[in-house]
Amino acid sequence: MANPNDPKDPKVAPPGGLSRGLTSYGDAGFSLFLRKAFIKGAGYTDDALGRPVIGIASTASGFNPCHGNAPALLEAVRRGVMLAGGLPVEFPTISLHESFAHPTSMFLRNLMSMDTEEMIRAQPMDAVVLVGGCDKTVPAQLMGAASAGVPAIELVTGSMLTGSHEGARVGACTDCRRYWARYRAEEIDAAEIARVNDQLVASVGTCSVMGTASTMACVAEALGMALPGSASPPAVTADRIRVAERSGAQAVALAKSRLSPADIITAKSVENALRVLLAIGGSTNGIVHLTAIAGRLGLDVDLARLDELGRETPVLVDLKPSGQHYMEDFHHAGGVPALLRELKPLLHLDAMTVTGRTLGEEIDASGPGFAQDVIRPLARPIYAQGGIAVLRGNLAPGGAIIKQSAADARLMRHEGRAVVFENAADLAACIDAEDLDVTADDILVLKNIGPKGAPGMPEAGYLPIPRKLARAGVKDMVRISDGRMSGTAAGTIVLHVTPESAMGGPLAYVRTGDRIRLDVPARHLELAVSDEELSRRRAANPVAAPTAARGYLKLFLESVTQADQGVDFDFLRPPRA
Ligand code: FES
Image (cartoon, rainbow, N blue to C red; front, side, top):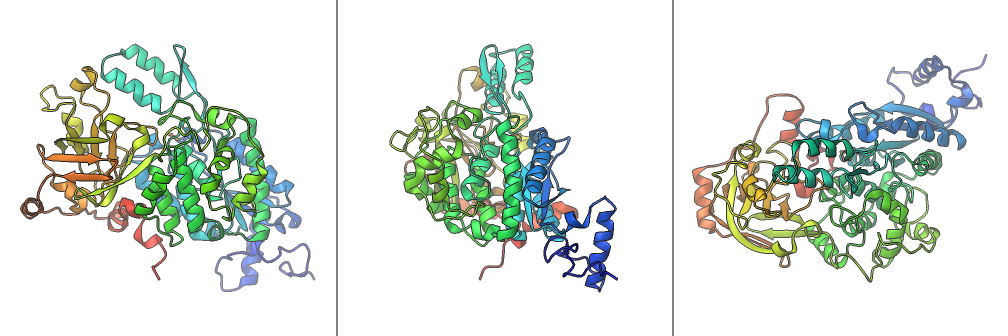
């Protein structure tokens, strides 16, 4: 009588596939027997069950319109897997949308990464396709996959289409902020802002500018974890569906080659990804996420090195919020392969990718390119230096960053009087008060929006211009916080001040009336208060780090690291050697 688990029987799953990670019943043969019995209940044949198993991590969710095309993508991935001889098996994970996650999606990114890691590890798959897109989903998936160590390929959902308001092209979410600022300044009325609201998100897909989602899509491709050319096709295009089919087929090849995330995410590929992030004028959030992804493999992203790369790497991509175009224009201009061609002299060309070929080989295979005005040549950049600068000084001993490509050039060297808000609630209560003592030359400071402070380091670093100044025509001011800002936002905004105020960093002791000096060319951020006075303030008002009694919040507050460590949980990094 045939043994249903006999490895010599061609109908039985070969090593790997369904035989991976058996459930513990104390009898491996019985465990496999039982597993096959259950999955056969779904109508699978022995032939199907003998194929390489390709997991497909699905983040389809009614609360995530950025992934609204997921059903079509999942179907195409399944087709690609089957055409290449694999067995696709879909499974759900947490899905996070920026506007549907309270208090902030960043609070839940690490939870999603743990879910992704453990579900990849717990279920029998030879490789996995990670279908993500909205800001925190791609980093969470890459963090989880890096830790799980199973061959993985990222597939982003792609950007939304742009809409039109009274003849002007609009898209989320740079234009969301621009029109909201005009509404706050009483330049447009309630009826017009409601019409704008209908047009900002013209289709499913991720934000249409170089925000965090687009940045992470480009980072995933530059890192080698996504197919060449896969970052830019918009969500609702045939190109996007074809990328999905090819990603499924490539996952089968990965299952055979056993090329793992650790073979692809290396010090060299992380540096390539940083170069791309700088050259696209990418989101500041991308730095935090890439630090966390690299950290899962024991790799550090050194802020000093980041600043060096920033000085050497020009901004070449002319997309909002740093420039003028949208993601669909970037795609039509050739996408990441066209950018990599320009950046070639600055890249580590021997870095491996999910295709099994090196980045250099993929660049050579991408052909010569064509004339367009979205991706500039290296010799004719939009900004000679990269979009992001690293600041240090007594206000940020552990560093802070500023997206200079999206800031006002006149404020790059600025000294002003601090106007301090103790937390987000204080800001909300006071920012629009007619009697707020503030001028356009002042520097707005917001405390307690760091990793532990808010908690979750919300995107509240884009402080609004006080209403009375906005009405007077003020468009930008220096703003400083320990929080993040949306990748779609613009302004002279200093972020990620480390250590954060909730941990007793110097930011906690800034008072209204103190003088602050910002010097971006010198990479300096200085609070003009003596060390002795800061010590006096610290002794008079010591900061107690926030705590929680139970649940995920307790885990978060006890384990989350600062911005320079990626805001990951300390126990998710491998122990330092
Ligand atoms: Fe999902 Fe912008 S809200 S990408």
